[in-house]
Length: 152
Image 1: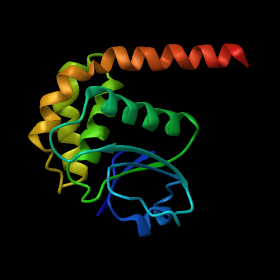
Image 2: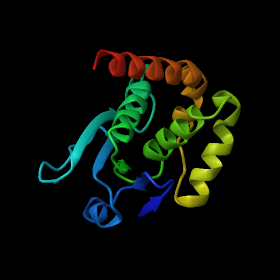
Image 3: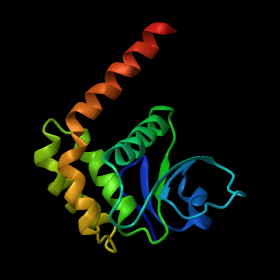
């Protein structure tokens, strides 16, 4: 299933239909092998679908998503089943863009669930969300983007 979450973010596991939806990039958050014949910009941050992922790996996935979107891509966030890892990353990203990300995560997760009904985020991912410091991560990404603009 492939679901539209925002105008620029799609979520799911159907690699054969991403281009028809207007996606120009794929962020896969699966550790499983990714097909090499995909004709799109791709990024990978392999998350285990269970315990054992450090917060930095989730943060890297969020930075990759932010970077792809900043380059103007419409992004499909992908994992093997499209129900746990990818919905979690999308909900974290949406929360990161709010004024109070730690307080808005649940609302953003509900938004993802409404658009992508198979969402069923594993408890291991939910448990790590408070450790991600989404507000500070977003501030850091914005500061980095300003430095890049000044350097040009």
